[in-house]
Amino acid sequence: QDTRATTATQAQPAAAKPRVVVLATGGTIAGAGASAMNSATYTAAKVPVDKLLAGLPELSNVAQVSGEQVFQIASESFTNEHLLKLAQRVSQLAKQGDVDGIVITHGTDTLAETAYFLSLTVRTDKPIALVGSMRPGTALSADGALNLVNAVSVAASKDARGKGVLVTMNDEINTARDVNKDINIQTSAFKSQWGPLGMVVEGKNYWFRAPVKRHTTQSEFDIDSITSLPQVDIVYAYGNVQPTAVNALVAGGAKAIIHAGTGNGSVADRMVKPLQDARAKGVVIVRSARVPYGFVLRNAEQPDDKHDWVVAHDLRPEKARILTMLALAKGASTQELQRMFWEY
Ligand SMILES: NC(=O)C[C@H](N)C(=O)O
Image (cartoon, rainbow, N blue to C red; front, side):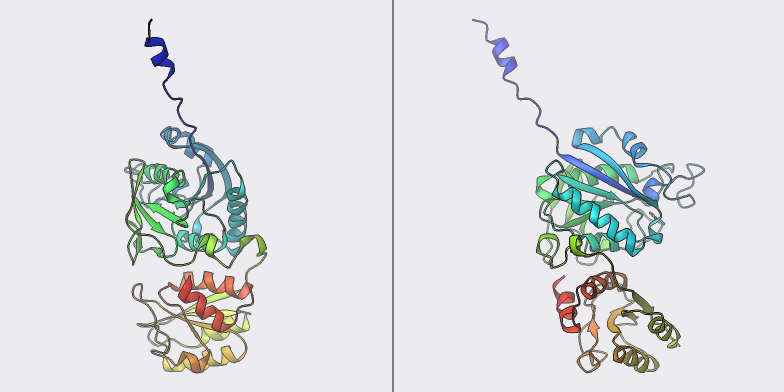
């Protein structure tokens, strides 16, 4: 009896690839410049998602990928409405049985803010990976292609489940909460002060740590029940700063002001009274720091208990703004907001 035929038919059929949806929002990863020398001079948000995906045949080895153009904008122009619309779409897709992971292509300038917003509001354990690029696809040594393949491969992997919203740039996997754009011009733009969670190399993830802060499935926020976000603004501290901006924001209807203080979140003597007055009018005051690393301590630099101010822990002012908007949308008190800053 010839056994060769039997042996041949015993070969296992290739397992179906995970299904990943790429939601495109614009940014440099969809940018185009006039020449290959233009690594920094170009127009963002030009190339449609279908074209981005069609240019990457490698993706089909990793996942069954489909694309959806949600916006086509540079990320510095993101608004609260964009955040809400994107998070609602991510939440819908995450509930679908035929979606295993979601990738969001995004401009890098506000990518970390959007990532944090999604990690706080989308209740899923499916992998969500945000990705951008520092050079447009038309440039020499463009970084978008590999970044995007890496993002799809992370979103497609079972071992990324339950790790919350991730940012995959420059071969690193960072958690949405900790990561920030720390360097412009360079492709190693994204850093977490507490270190990356891992790396993605040739389609495989290498994990070294896991996030401990509440996110996604453990979050008390839920995009499905949020329809609008309150006005929360940021005031930047510097030598000779005057109360002009604080007073204007209060008059303009800000519900909270994030004070990006010097050093440990310190507040200039002439700014204390205007901030106290704002608080007396019901405006929530959050003390953060313009210093990128370290963290702000409660009742150090200022008597926060006495002022009824909140401290932003290690969150940058722009990320403190995201958490404060979500807290106020839920009607949180200043005590609850402070708890949230320690927990998220
Ligand atoms: N590298 C980039 O994506 C920067 C661009 N300004 C953006 O955020 O859309």
